[in-house]
Length: 548
Image (cartoon, rainbow, N blue to C red; front, top):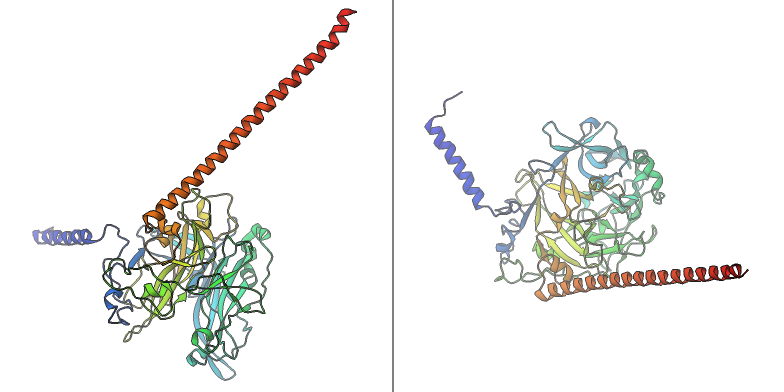
């Protein structure tokens, strides 16, 4: 061992001092990045009028794993399958199942010649995984040997033509899989597939996951008997009617990444909704009809002024798209829905009951960037918050989210495909039928692909996804008050409402107590009268006996 010389001591002290200075210079909450992402495409697509606010350092939030001792995102180990997987979607299986999760992920494209034409075929692999740990004690999801390529049969045929994007004609097969539990407890799978249509060249399809993966029924064990019947046994096409004159617009030729969701306040438990674009909510009707725009939904929104809040001297920019999401992104470019949407009640479990005033729907959205001069793609991730009942207005948008351990500058972007509640981790014996609703202290798991080459996942508390948001105009007063951004009168009004509700509850309790007391008193008096009557009758019977 080399002696610890004074020079080495000085060097060590210098390094320690530099680290201390760096830590002191960071904000108190280490979840905020001190510098902007150097490869955010905001830099490359900057408009001179808003360039200053596009690269501001306070528009980032780092998400850290609750299980990983370093906070890094976690891995999915599919080595035993012998296949390379990427861009996974997760479905947690109920307690008592043979495995913890179902994973569907994409395998690398394969080249295929059909009718003399070259295609790039997408393949999807299904496998079951269990929560395990690496040799370093860090969490991972580990797959066994079993796996299956699903939806391999080309049920639409390879023929399709994207008029405005002909370079997409070579891609065939199922893509962008997303799994979702319905309120009634059915697992559904939504995905993209080519369509041979006059205008539509790629469409969204829906199928029950049990029909797509027959092995899922066996993996569910006895729980499978408690589930609703399989209603969608074959992939059905979901489509919307484009506005007149826009039939050939790329956004209506290639449908992608619709986000399934349900309102827990809908009287129809089977009602299935899709957030197709930010603020564009559609309702599923039937297989032979296009989805219908939810007429009571609020399609337009705007960010609350001033924006950014840290730069009130700058005039707030509003998008041509007329959405709070685009205002926050400072861009009119297309925004993709990324994950299915979940419902969150804004309190810890057991502290309140869900209501329209304290429950929201959340979903992740992504905007893709292809910086000029660079060979890779980048995705910005944000959470959009909507009211959980009509008019389903957009109420807030998060800062840019990044996952601890995510690499910058190497093309290792993350594409987030699913967002689920980790229900089995709650420790409850009586688990809910609706696995897509939870509370602030419940766990949410995100799964994602890393640079189209590897799968990953991140476990966080639901509260992390509704913290540090930019408010939208027209957000509910209760939500603003919860976020600490309401006006004093809103908070006072909320407090007054809560006090009224509490008083009302106390009044009900007092009334019930009084009624019970009165009932008890009346019962006692009645009982006494009956006893007196019996005693009187007994005396009457005894008097003749005495006389005789």
